Amino acid sequence: MEAQRIFWEVDTVILPVGITEQHGPHCLLGTDHITAEAVALAMGERVKLPVLPVIPIGVSSHHRQFSATL
Image (cartoon, rainbow, N blue to C red; front, top):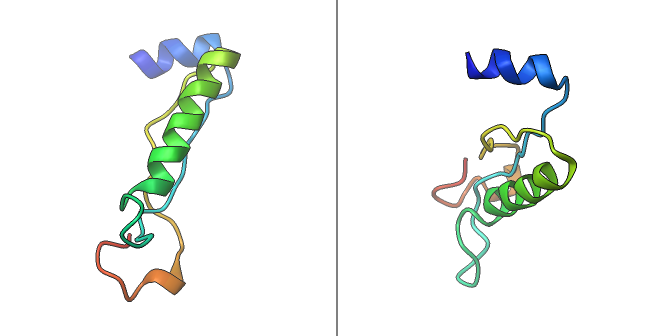
């Protein structure tokens, strides 16, 4: 019901995407999707568009050997 109401008001949404992969001991495991979500939320507020939940997976074949990479 909420999505139907939103799409009566706008025809564009923001979809943040950022992979979950290791960045070494100096960054959080979710650095990419945490950053993507933060930027999307800030932009959504600025341009008055809804922001969908972040998609924390992607393609990162060069990180596959590390645990917790999605």
